[in-house]
Image (cartoon, rainbow, N blue to C red; front, side):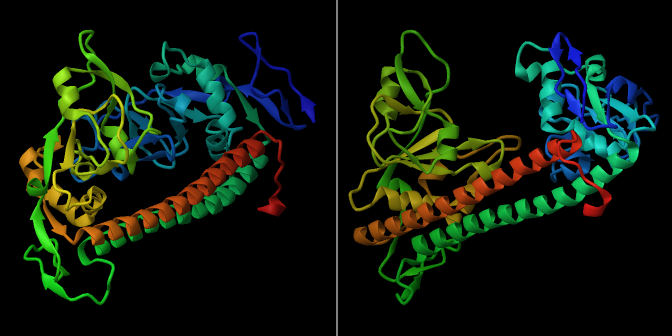
Length: 440
C-alpha cells in the first residue's frame, strides 16, 4: 500500500490511503464543466434523484403532473451519455450522478464531462459513495442543511480516487453485478411487505363486513360498496351512533391560551394507536377548544384534508385517556354516543377498504382534497351485536400485531442490505477491497 497525506482546509482529506498504483487527483483535473444549452428544448428531460441517480423525468410523472415547472425548455443544459450531473443544492444529499442518457437538465444544475483517464461508471459509484457524500456536505456552504450548496469550485477541489483505467472498468462491472443482486433482494423484501399490507387489508375487509364465522347466513346489505353481511347484522349511519367534530386547533401559539399537547395530522397518519407513549408536539388552544377537542379513550381521529385523496379518511384510535391533549387541525374526532357500539370495531371498519373507497368518492377538491363534516357523518357502518364487535376488533388487533412484527423484521433486513450495499461500494471504490477480472 502507498500512503498519501492530503490536506484540505487544514484538515486531512476523506481519503488518505490508496493502493499502490492508484492516484489521488482533484476533481477539477478529472472533469470539465459543460455550458452548452438546448436551442429547441426538445431533448429528453432528465432528473437527478437521490436513490436512482439520473433518470428520465417522465419516469417520475403522474397522470396530472407536468414534466417540468417550465413550459419552455429552450436554454436547458445539454447532457450527453456518460456526463456527470450535479444538483448543487442537493449534492450533499446524493443529488448527483452519471447520466445513462443524452438529454437536458435544469440550467441551475452543473454538467461535467470526464477526462480520458476516467471511466464514468466507476465515478458514478465513487462520487455517490458514503465517503464522498460526507465530503461534499463538508465542502458545501449555507446557513442551514436545507440551504446547503456545493458550487463547482468547491466540488473541483475535492480529491478523486483514480485507479488505472482498466481497473476502474473492472470495479464498475463488479459493482454493477453485486448491486444488482442486492437490489433484487431488496425488491423482493419490498414486495413481501406490500403483500403483508394487502393481506391485512383483505382480512380487515372480510372481518368487518362478513364476520368471523364463514358459515353464517348472509343477506344483502342494500349498499353496493358493502355487499352482503351476516343476516343478524344491521346497517347504521355514523351520525346516529356517534358525534363528529372538526378540530379548529392549529399550529399557531398564543400567550393568552392554554398550553397543551396536540395530536396533529402526521401523528394520526403514521400510528395505529395514540396513547401516553405517543410523542406529541406542544401548542396552545382556547378554553373552548380544550373543552371540545380534548382526547378521551375510544376517540377515533380521522384525516380529513390532504393534497391527495389517497391520504384522507385515515383513522387512528385513542386507547387511553390523555391528560392535557387535544386534537389538531385537519382532523375530525369521532366519539361514540351509544354503548351498543365498540369504538375499536368502528375504528377498524373505518380502516377498511370499503370505508376508504367511500371517503375517496365523497372527497372534493382539485389541488387539495377534503372531507366535509356531512360526508363523514353519513358514512354507512355495519352493526353486529356488541360482543361480536369486540371479538372482531380483537381478531384484527392480533392480525395487525403479527403483520407489524413481520414487517419490522423485513424492514430491518432491508436496512441491513442497504447498509451492506453502501459499505461494499465504499470499500471497493477506495481500494480497501480489491477486485480482479477473475471474480466478476
